[in-house]
Amino acid sequence: MAQNLAKPTAEMHPLRFVIERDEADVMRREMGLAAVTDLLPALVPAAQRMARPSISGYHVGACALGASGRIYLGVNVEFPGVPLHHTIHAEQFVVTNAAIHGERAICFLAVSDFPCGHCRQFLQEIRSASQIQILITGGDFSAADKYRPLYYFLPHPFGPSDLLNKDVPLLLEPHRNDLIDEEDEIGGGVEKREICVNGLGIMEEELRAAAVKAAMAAHAPYSGCASGFALAGCDGKVYSGSYIESAAYNPSVGPLQAAVVAYLAAGASGGGGVGEGIVAAVLAEREGAAVSQEATARTLLAAIAPKVRLSVYPLRSSAGTV
Amino acid sequence: MAQNPVKPTAEIYVIESDEAERMRREMNLTAVSDLLPALVPTAQRMARPQISRYHVGAVALGSSGRIYLGVNVEFPGVPLHHSIHAEQFVVTNAALHGERSIQFIAVSDFPCGHCRQFLQEIRSASQIQIQVTGQGEYRPLSYFLPNPFGPSDLLKEDVPLLLESHCNYLIEEGEKEEEICKGLGEMEERLRAAALMAAREAHAPYSGCPSGFALADGKGRVYAGAYMESAAYNPSLGPVQAAIVAYMVAGGSRGGGGEGGVGEGLVAAVLAEKEHAAVSQETTARVLLAAVAPKARFSVYRVRSSTSPW
Image (cartoon, each protein chain N blue to C red):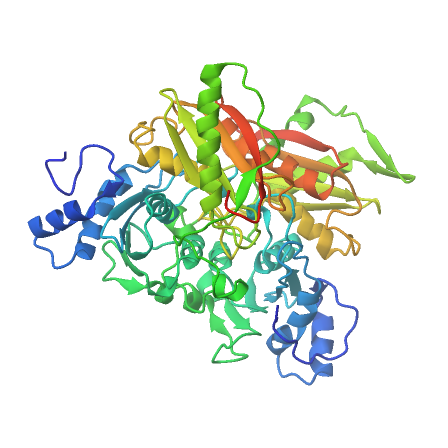
């Protein structure tokens, strides 16, 4: 199928999913561009090439500029074998990528295609979402290479302000969910189990701590059911991600998806399946959650890393209320 | 029937075209489409938002002249992507009744982006007229979702779109199992037939994995719904959700006001889908069914593609 043709891009340094501010500035100057915002559309084709659309074959790339000056790349990721609601869109990837790196605001976003309604909705979780500037690199967009505010693409949006009080933190803002790890409660004698793969030892404790930390940072103001997920790669490193909820519910990004974004963005997955190299997985979520991720996470994990056993760590509110 | 034409006392999800016309005349309205906003509060009251308590109602007018009501449905215990939005409900309702096109939709709130996307599956979606109660007149969907991504980005021109006639050539896989008890066997037979028929009508042009789901209540009545895929993938409506809409629309679930569980009264369920489907609904269906109707028996009916209809 014909896809958007890549605009000429300068030869660049090996492309990673995060480009630091000073490096972005070097690239901008090398390409003779006036502003870093002009750099984003130039990077979209390279992002597209890193996409993992294993069902559709349809590659989408996204590139965002954060308030920090850092640039984030995102790609779509599809998961054969499981229902389509597990899919990660490029725009969701790029926002999750930014969140993982502590970015506080996204100001500009370039994408290879018009964002679908699901993504235009997901983006509403960011404060002042309507003012995020969006540029589409492909298609017949009459004002080519021009940024337009998200409000143009989703007028009269439904969003956080329809459901939340003003003082509730939005996506990318610091969250500190009121959660206690049940095992921490029992006492300091948590048995430190080690997982050995190919001679590498990975502390399950490290995974658990990462999943719990991710749960504490999760954006789940609608259900109150924060969750976090941690993956261990065969490189011995831990990759974690937080659940990201949407006011419109369905566009929420599951915690395993967020951890997969961390995994892919770090370049941990090789050229094969998305789950290649994953050796351990941990979910931390509220016990008896009104919105529980466990069964769904098991389903997706079985599809991407069938040999990995999922450990689940229950959390509860420190106030003692459910 | 209802005494007040805009406030039916029972849970009514479909208004036939002659009844709609009668209501229009009684209310001195120019067009039946003017009737839809007046019915939105009625729909809202029937909603089942068991997590958010946020009631959404949607009312649609089909080209047949029939009016359909829709509500949002939430499922505690499972991830939020299982939720059914009111706009998705109303489209599923129309599909169940063989409606070929939807022209007007009135909603209690501005549709979210997920729904504006889901609606793209209908042919000429951009011209569907949308009105939000209290927020002005009808505007085309293209106003709410300009430059949409949709079926035309992925499909050839001749592929049937949502609400159009689908004929997925599916037949059962392998031999039928012997039923142990005749009573169970007969219901299982009807459930399988209904799930297979739904799968044959399912809109799944992106994955090529159509599926259907059938539910049975304690009285042996069967309700079935078909999977509805979205070009944007995530807004797809699962077959279990479609069957739940069928159950609610038929008056099967009478919790009333969000009190009772949506799955109250369900005793058995069958999923019909392709063996080794690239997009398999089985595990997910189990998760949702366990939350909605934990005591219902569940079985999976494997089907496969064939080159001819039967």
